[in-house]
Image (tube, rainbow over all chains, first blue to last red; front, side, top):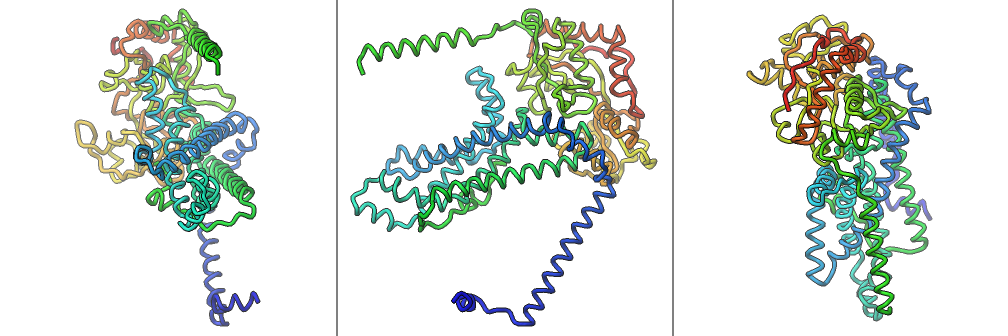
Length: 292
Length: 284
């Protein structure tokens, strides 16, 4: 059954096609190995694999005193801003779908305004503005969270709006015909299906928030990039090894975040089926996913 | 809900707010020197990523020439070392941090410039740096500024040092060098070591920090061509603090501390001219 179905989907490659595929695969592997060797050789020539450049990362003091405090800074700012951005996104996303112009227009203005400003400026002006307007010296953490929340919340508002609009119209029409009110249709019919469609875009935006927390350097916020990539290499003269290690930490963080979000969504969905098409983040943000 | 209960809740809320307002307020001082005398503590802004000037260590302490000068000045103002809170200031946020009161004083390779004087008051300078050139230790081809023609020099993000080479007079030397962009001076130094650059040019004290770390990998040419007066930043028109800071700097040179600190932090760098006397003050 499955083999015949497969044959219908595409023609099985013949001997010549298989040979061609194998040759192309081999060429691809050789090119990748060549590039890897070139990078390794250049690094080696420049002394980037000297043990003295890498031994600091075996010192628990370096992790306790520099990398981990930065990691805590990154995670705490990202975690809080992701939660707040999801709330903001939900509020303004639904606001943009409101039947009342006095809710729809302000929501649109807020979303478009904060989506257009670079995160770096938003973080800077959150702190500077608080002082100029209220004479309040805002902590760096608060300013970073505000900047990240406003930007990512605005992008997520568009994601929420697009996700709800991605659910086929027949779903809501059927719900209305059963006597459900707008709130019920939204809560029981549209949102559960929209979440599935929105999940890839939401996860992408969470990753953006995590990485953008590094922009807090403008107000001297102690995050992973600040401590691990600016302070640490200037102690040990190991910029490239530090860049590699910090990149790996970021990769692990982002993979963990993606896994966590996907697992949560899968658990909440269980057997729920969705008729909504997945939302593309590029379509929502106009081809970009970062604030910078 | 009964009106009496609502009234009670409002009263409790008002009481809480007033207590918070009373308890939260810290004493405000007319000047930093008054704060130093009264509170016996200061928040000082320094660099956290500049070897030999201001660098945060893995144990959380900060060290460097700027840090040691700051400790000396603070002690003269009546603040012991353990009562100083160190705050990172980068080039982009020094003025806002001073204006917002996030820091009391800034010792962070803070060059005294006319446009900066409009926003903050400067004490000092406590040292005069000079723009110079750093090359690889084995490079004999570059011995003076003019040798940078057609050579690859670093263009660090946010820095204008390269313009002193490439711009036409009176601001620059009109030397046609190839500019290689980099994020930070640490990256410039890394590229110099990796031979994708021929020279790095900026303040000699900044270069000395990296050269000292390189252990003979680099050398400074010792051909200074600008003056960079490193001052102590403070709130605009805080003349009392400015005068007190200047008095402390004068004493630091008179008792030989400044010279020994300069030797301690920059003595190992080849080609660097260390200060012998206090620089002329800008005036408060």
